[in-house]
Image (cartoon, rainbow, N blue to C red; front, side, top):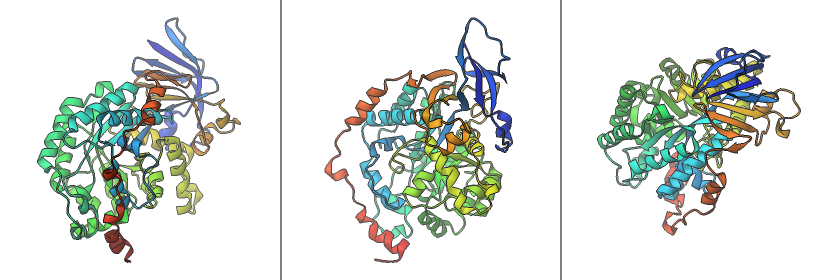
Length: 479
């Protein structure tokens, strides 16, 4: 079956290659989809129409490659609006104890994350996924089932750590020590079993390696993840220097830069994506760029948790690939990629006086598409509207009031407040959205599931006061 999209506005692939520097970037083209791939892209009105094709009128529409939600935690859908505004280390104390423990909740968390990503322009999600202790394989099975039910492309990277919670704090040895999680060798064996069971690139499902971060992972676990990444060509995804506290932990533990230490363990490669990087310096940026790694920018959660502003302009200037992520809904309270892209585009004007260096809408879209695809180790498959790439595409309705008047569609999409503008979407050539309606799953069934969450037990309603005195002492130097 072929689909021909006629006379649609798009951002040409050649503009993305030039980093979005063309001021007259939009072109009207015909796009032909065959099976899961883009077969042809040609000037509008030049691709012949045949009787067996499905033809879509692309006039007054904008076609873009699907965005990648480069970092999120799907289970946190159930914690939207639940956790107060706190620094990450105190916020986590609440998150861990209120995390859902039922497989059906994790299934619906994946479904909700996929749907919200899709209707904000995304066709792929990196789920740095919580897994229920003792039910790790069952958890991943539930997540995969959720993503398949929607049809979105998904990388599931189960969160793994082998050091206790207290290890993530500066001077964490002074805190009460919880029982250590599983040993590194057990976790690595478990990850290998997940790869064997669930990694299915031919159907858009990928297993990634997801160590939580250096602050709660041993060198053995991090190096083992790097080895699995290389052996199986998998994305290695982890948190990196999200907060000042993590920066201090690295200094205490290693005596050298955290990025430098990760490099010595073999953790940095083009398959590596690192979430946040708020506290990286120029030497870190250079190391990451040389390795071909990706930094995933999560501006909403970075602000909500008071983590700071990641040096995104410096990253781009020094050649480091940058992508966007929503982060989990417990630190974002949404999964709206357009909101993330808008904030991530505008936020850095306050860090750079030279406005020629500010991020343009075209550059932001390059980060969300090409940059995101590279970040999930899929840059050779998706992220571009070009022949031979898989058809992960989103069609926007330029007649929607939130995209009027017809000035600069790209600028309105990135810097405006577009709502309900996704007219159609395809993942691997399969149409998931048509006329603004999801074709694969009844959204009202999802909404009904979210309306009736299991009641949290009283003991799961955590307070952060158990670690707050220590945090205030070591980070704020006051009682």
